[in-house]
Length: 261
Image (tube, rainbow, N blue to C red; front, side, top):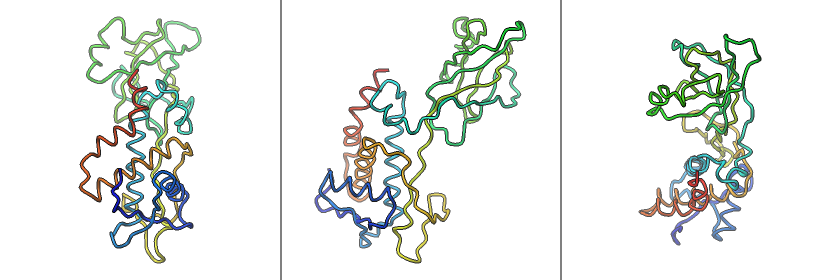
């Protein structure tokens, strides 16, 4: 998959943990060493860019309804946060509450609302929240089978740039929403690999002084990150025209299970 004449970048032993582990994985998988080739003008930031793009691609594919794939779900557990309570923000719309997602939010796994009706004195009820697509929202809100109901302990929600929009249609009060979610996996940085006196800047132009390792230790995901990072490097450094085909092969087995949902 990687051209024979392609020269890898060697990571020095004093480099960041992420780079050392990736170098080890490459050695095991292809017999090639990862080394810094200044003749190709490939910077440390570019190498980290391959890793970070790989991480985003893998998560984008595997974080889609992971409950349908036990294998993937097990390897994503380090990214799970359970029973995080969100309070309703003030909104001009009287039919729904806006719940602001946490800063590290990536994707929803489970969501329930704690609601209370002014028409009864009983304790608050836990309502199941159904996520609907925006283009189906109007239709769902008009349906007697899907509209928010305190009696049937169900309501609907939509994800927007403000956060999670949870509907109550003014018929009950939502006290809080509890969610399980996958958190974002921060980018990796390896400024320790730079020569003395050089500065490392991230994608936002901010200087980074300390290494930032990958915050997950699943061997399964490490292998996927390495395989896809190599594929990205090959795409960017050569005329390789089968990127999508090879990417699909790398991700195919796990995505088959996801598609069953």
